Length: 526
Image 1 (cartoon, rainbow, N blue to C red):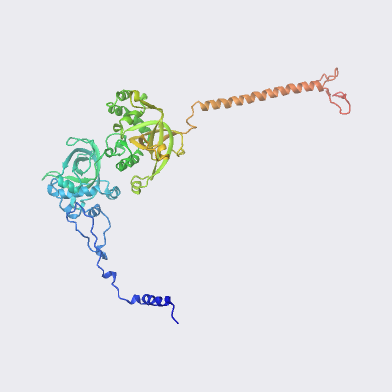
Image 2: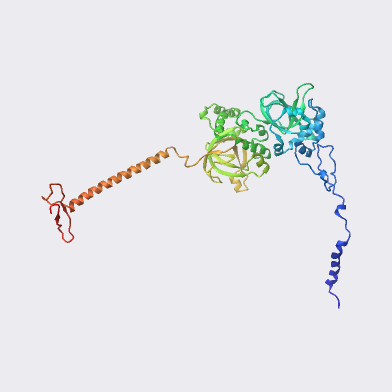
């Protein structure tokens, strides 16, 4: 009798599975480790073409914790040899340019949160002079005045290697003193003129490099910073806003990645300015903004000469020439038709600036807007203005369809181009709406019950008093008629007996008897 075919096939398979663990195999520990080539760094000529073999990391090879800024700089290919190349007691020498450019490039790649983690809020000059070599790479907050800015252009081959065309050197004095420092940076505000004497309020977060100076002369601390911040006189500059951030913000168009830092920084600093202060400063700044825009139209020069009581917000300058108004304060009133909560998705931004959401309002200004000139002039009765605020007043409604009267005092950011509601409903439409984008800490809200005429309370009180008087008069009329009614009834049914009156004043009362139609007479003498 033949065995089934499946038994003949299954027997070899069972044997292979049973004895497979006994067969010799090559251990993975004996295999050659994988070779990984790191990404090439154009700034590091000494970088290896391949990484060391992957294997077990011994206790001595464990990566150290990040304790100082220089630990992070090492990850960006700036090691101790570059700091050792810096020599105190002399100006920045060509031999030190390699280290300077590497640190400039690495500092620009630092995250703002990393800088905040290692930032020294106060600069101790005595400590810098005592141990400069030990403190190289430490980050200090520098605040004072920019006195002079120069620009150093790099050779084409050097510029290509370090991905920068040149760098700025700013001479600063700290605080209100004459203590000089030098700050090297890849960015400088465009409003600062080069090679001229300045007196601009400025700040920087600087990596300490060395002590510059001539032989036998005073020493000046030198730093590298990501950017030079500009704080001109005015409410926003006093609040700490870096007005140089507007160099990266286009005057019109959609929101871009370059707008991010200025947008959130402005929302953050606006919280320091109360609404009443913003209103006062905005009314003061309006004439100057109209004078700057007068080159476009003579109408703006006329607006600049109006007395303060007649100054008001005008849409036309912002729509036709928004650049002079960027970063300037405006104040206006209108009807908020939409209030939308916007959540900040980037956790780094939320952590840096201390808020996780803001509100976007679409406010329709009461004044008409005129576009074009002559026969092409077009008048729009109400125009939308988009406002972004940190918070809404307590109790104010929010949603896609509201109608609340508000007053906004804030800073003009840009002329924002966004898709209209019709385009959002129908994707086939490509209509874009240009609207001024205003950033503020909040809005002043006038609820419906509080926005009534001031005489409404007096009118209501007068009506209440009138109703009370009418009620008293009606009660008096009712009681008077009731007395007359009782007098008539008593005369008809109750009569005194003729001649039987009591001279002492006693009344003779006729009491009807139920059994007879005529009543019996009773009285005091009966």
